[in-house]
Image (cartoon, rainbow, N blue to C red; front, side):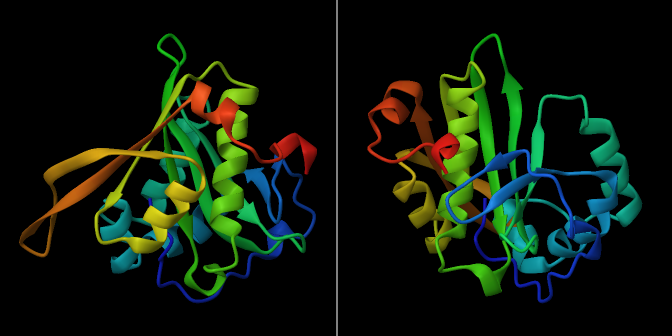
Length: 199
């Protein structure tokens, strides 16, 4: 999970009339489509982003194949869109286990759109989807312990810091710790904030 992508530019002409799957306070969520592969590939190819979200940048072809493969899988991927349909990031509910009611959240916001509350609004909306429309009971998230923007977003959205996964990530020859967060359904129910369906 990251709030820092280092990617400049967010133009995506195909988004002009994009249908929203879910709304949030300041943004909308639109289901990722195969046509979004180039945009997502550009964001994820940045080395800062790759480090923050713990991925190795892959080819555009691999990104297209992943989107096609995951369309009916255990994840839901969304572009985060401003009211004018400008794409500003990506958010996902991955590793969904309906039997256990568990899933992981992933968030990536382009740097020029950080600091405006869009990451928090998008995460709140995804959490509302997981607990309000899906039978989830526990959501988890991980981020680097030095990723201050992501740590702040998780805390603001009600996630509880569970602990540290020590030396869980290798980057530039050094091991780094990951902060582990979770949010349970009763904790979500106790949050005093409007729900996404009230937006």
